[in-house]
Length: 491
Image 1 (cartoon, rainbow, N blue to C red):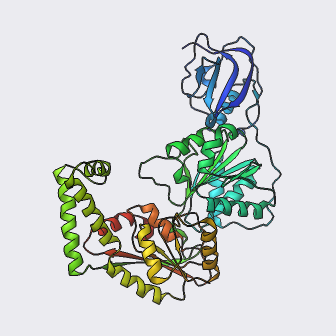
Image 2: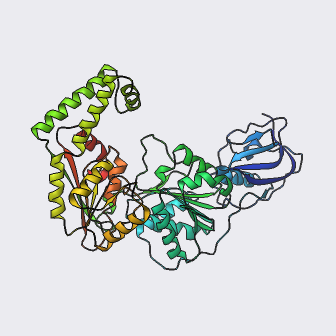
Image 3: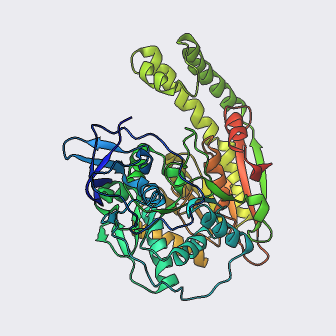
């Protein structure tokens, strides 16, 4: 392999989500080989370096990450911004002098306004993260204080920080939380705001749109609910940010597509489950599965529609769930397909919102009329049906921001005893007073089921939370229920 050669002083600059390495030319070309980074390097990966290497002298290709590529248009080498820390450490380790004109983040004199002693597991989480060069994912249940761990990380690293969140509700919650924690102006990017400061909160969507310009602005990036991050567009935002320090927070790290976090944030460095914290740091809880039978007429209708649907799948060699797209395509191409799709919808509706479930829901709402209850369903149509029948406020993706805030505020202060929702309250909402959850229907997602349980686990004195799961007996919903309960919290 030919070696790269210095032609001028080496300068690192940030451009459009990548790092330009100026002052080096190929002799005649460079395709850098991967070389293991010395994991024992203790020097912090930010700032310039010093060493000795004369212009015109060959450079060891191991100075550069494996992602380094020659840009023939501008005649510079480039690496993705995410490899900034690795590049700096490699250059320093080999004594190559360079000027770091890439980073534009600041060292901050941050002092938390209130001194709260962290719980032992929060301290352990911070120590585990710091031990991995301040890169990695911390997994804690909802209500276990992930946000407090993040404020500890910000105070420890003392660098310009970007917090990335999935929803506007979380944008507002983090804004309030950071303002209270540090007493300094907090920037907002998203939700109609474009105010970038040393501590800034943004949404995943806004980060994706603006990271090519802001990727050098922050030394620490925190991804809240980081299980969203590995999706292709959001992952690109992480790769275009040069922040050497990265923290991911989630209660449910596993993804159905199997994608991980190592190349975007770092590995999982600390994890505690609901069962490890309940009773002492989270509310004690019970989970009750109620199997609701269909009436004779409902059973006959269910079985008839199910037969039409399953018959179409078998006739066309479709296997679920991986064949869902094929089913949708074929169901639009023939009368038999359209009948199968209508049959699928009818049998599914019977399972998700059987009249017997509504009767059980009525009894549970009456029994828990003195509690704070969240009713979860799989679809908006059922939300509105329950809202009308029981005169409960409803929250869906169609609910306006001010109305949603007013409903949750009234719920938290006790003016409302119950709220019905679909999926929008699965994450990113603060309802500390909730102590009862009724899952009328849901998907087979383990994450969704754990998130719904987490909504009622915020600890308070003498609180015991309870989650009811209503399942239509003898339907496909039983298999869905078994699948989503494959978590230690339900064992």
